[in-house]
Amino acid sequence: MKMRRREFIAALASGVAWPLAVRAQPAERVRRIGVLMSYDEHDPWAKTYSSAFTQALADLGWTVGRNVRMDLRLAGGDINRTRALAQELVGLQPDIIVSHGTPATAAFQRETRTIPIVMVNVADPVATGLVAKLNQPGGNTTGFANLEVSMGGKWLELLLEIAPGLKRVAIMFNPDSQPEPALVPIFMPSLETAARSFKIVPIIAPVHGDGEIETAIVALGREPGGGLFVMPDGFLQVHRVPITSAAARYNVPAVYPRFDFVRDGGLLSYGIDVLDLFRRAATYVDRILRGAKPADLPVQFPTKFEMVVNLKTAKALGLAVPPSILLRADEVIE
Image 1 (spheres, one colour):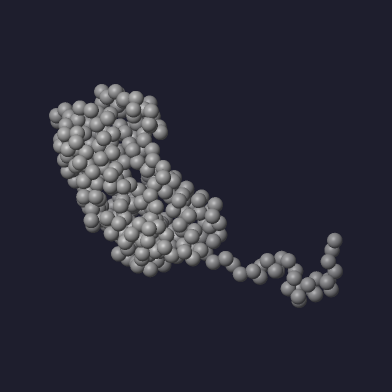
Image 2 (cartoon, rainbow, N blue to C red):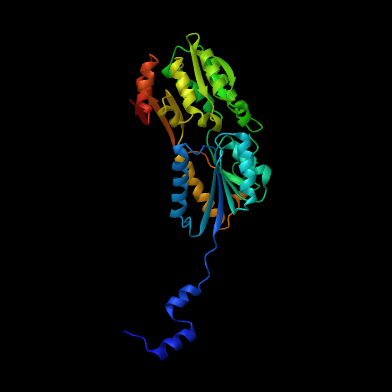
């Protein structure tokens, strides 16, 4: 039915014509979220995790392009780049920051004590000085931790379960990517306790690049009985292919903190479901954008863990995977 000219003018004057009434509504304020991840731009997992986070936000009512703007940066496991990107993102004055990993969170804390920070996949945040208490973080930082200090012993136990003939195990990490206090002392007590229990010699193996990774693994493979434990470290995550390749070439059994090492040819992994942490991080971002204070939101720990074993790699290393591993594995790569 057509509206008469006189009725249209009257409606326009009263402000009730529905198309104009819709236009007259104030636009929803766009919130800005800065995200810093430790992966590099070529790593497919960077897209996987950022997509999971973005989708979880959308499920909570925050849609990129409508009421949220996302500024994503990738540090590639480089501590200097991490610090530079943290400074850049803080300069954009976002409403909230999502930091992936302990070094990124520490870098953001050096740049701001006011912008809320939701950390994802960080090691013991109290021991590393990122928060005051788990239940009451204080300050501008809260989020989701990854592993408890007792995990060090668990990794060594699993490695010996699949490779029982080991006599010494190198603990690989990049000292440049470790915040103060570093992750190595945090995990070392449980590692050393387990090593004494199993009569294993622990070897500290700091590395700064692919050359030193190769050298460390070559040394392990010179004599029988050498094993490798790769520390949860953003640098090592980015360099996982050189690590798994060298371990295969020099016949060194290794245990890793993340399943993607095993999918790239590693032997065994046990660790958290990082995808789940990114989805859960979206719930804290949502709460803070709606008025909650980071200081009042307790730090949470993982609820999902996963074990992955690569049977092809085990066979190449001459190892028989015991039923105890196969029965507990969430994924078996053949």
